[in-house]
Each structure stands twice: as C-alpha cells, then as structure tokens.
Image (cartoon, rainbow, N blue to C red; front, side):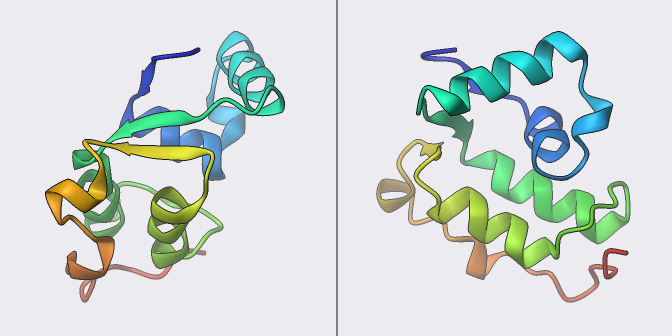
Length: 102
C-alpha cells in the first residue's frame, strides 16, 4: 500500500464500518497497519468526512469530532498536502448541524 492515497469512503469504513469493506480491502489495510505503514489521505477528506456526518449520509459508532481528530493526529494517517502547509485544521470545519452518531 506504500504511496497509495485512501479514498474518503474507504477511510470512513475502515475506522467505523469495516464490515462494509471487501475482504481483500480489509485484509490489505490491516496488513499495512500491522507493518506500520502510514495511510495517506487527501486534505479534502477532512472536509468530506465532516460533510458526510453533517448531512447524515454516514452513521458511525464514533463521534464525528473523534473521527476528525483521529485522522489529523494519529501517526498512522498522513494528510496530504501536509496540514501545516495548507493551514487546514478540522477545528475550523463547521459541525454545528451535524447529527449525533448512534
């Protein structure tokens, strides 16, 4: 998986809905995680994740803010381009109308 950028839907499913991934996808992600590889995601993924929660198009057992925090702060994820250079921070993404996850 080295050098691969994960799609927003793959990220969401990997974090909170792994049963929605195909067996091969899930196996590849878990093996890469076991090897300590970083998952690369586009900076726009942070905005797309917030939008998916806000519109209710995704339901996860995790709190939306926890999902964004995980993507920004855990070493297993690398936001491209580097979040420091883009000044993109999920704390600036409006979440006020976001339904709570169940």
